[in-house]
Image 1 (spheres, rainbow, N blue to C red):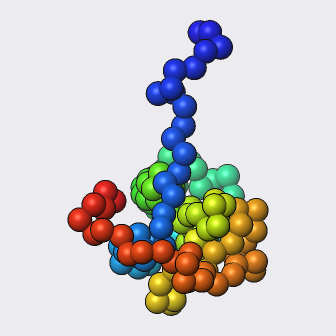
Image 2: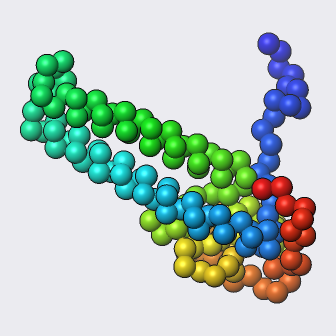
Length: 162
């Protein structure tokens, strides 16, 4: 293949959210985030159970006739399923221009625009709406409140595509 790249081969830039659009998307995220967190917690518990079994049984655990081999196989299948679900959900959010920063804290960032600069519109579980932002190279500790001008007009709900 040559060095030329077709336009359809280039990655799409993330969606830039208005604060109003992000606020509307929070309803679905408030339902999704606890599920993602539960999957992550279960994955941690499975990892700990596998470690316990491996520590107790050692290399014997993987023998085809081992009494806990069936349990190990079930844990492996559940791990694969949960990883797939988690990866699919997080990848889908990323495709929308939403970054999952911390499942424990329920911390989400939306790509947005403030004063003509691409920033992260920042929301954390328990907050009523998106009211903060930070630079892309910053983080939660550097977030600042959005002013009324940055909040902008409310979106036309009939035009939403997500």
